[in-house]
Image (cartoon, rainbow, N blue to C red; front, side, top):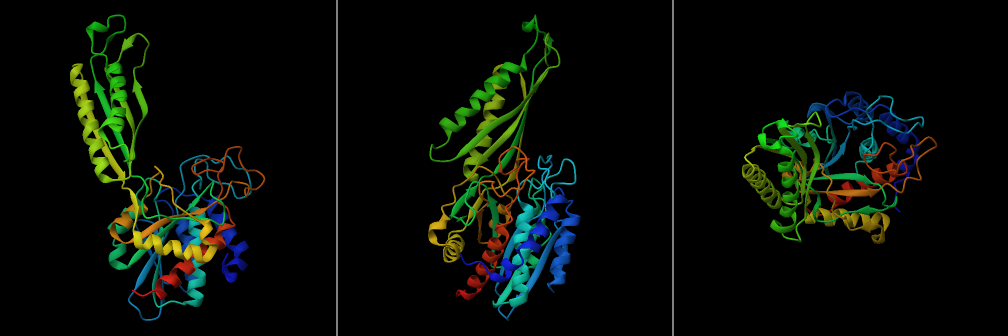
Length: 397
């Protein structure tokens, strides 16, 4: 395993930075303190910075040589609105906020690479260090792009990395094509006519209408979509009524839709609207249908995924570079991959045995209150970023 010795020597101090960020989590577009930590570190290493892009984003600029070529490396900074179960020393100090997805570690791995790249500059071109806010539902990548990320900092490719619990530390995973799904939300209100529950013929009961709708939605997945195309419709909330002896006026359904392609997403949205409206019409109810598209699918570009895989193989051995199994989770790095060539890959976070005394009783999985990032990954991830940069600039354009 080719970990850079200078980064490995900084492992303790880098872990302290990560734990400080973990102890002070900030939600989307509120990452002021985290951005301050990032900016202070970059400035101390002589790296010019630009602040405020996408509200709280930070971009560091490292130039080496005269080549106009440029590459972007992205790390996310925000935490989740959830209560941490861990009680170890670096647990969250802010109730209802937690770094349960490892963004504290992503930020620190990129800082580790930044320090080494700034000190050595063994490349000919420009590296843009993208510290992004608001990945957890805020679309920070989209907002940074709107604020001119790729206009002010033109780059030829962009890369992102996420830790992956359950995959061994020391392993990576990358593949071309769709690797994370689109994220979408729907809200449907079935409006009927309230009545006494003992006299249902005097009203229009929206509850059985909603029940038929939920069942019918699954036929979209099983009968309207090709079996080889991935898609999920999950109705996760149903709200109706306030009393046991009253037929309610309305019933509200909410949930999520996940797909790997826009074409399947278009079909699902169209069919859900048709099903909802016609089921309501069949029962003399009124349908209010809304569908909100959050993040598009994360689709890796073939050439960049192959390049990233080769750098991984050179670093940890081909046997430790796994196929990246697509997941129905979503990621707003997808916006960057829509605008630029690049890829998004996973680094193994281990099985949770790295957690210190005082960790919660639950598993070490993403978005779990007992999660913690594996600090052993910081030198590995930082070294990977450096080796990716140096190999990318060494390759012919």
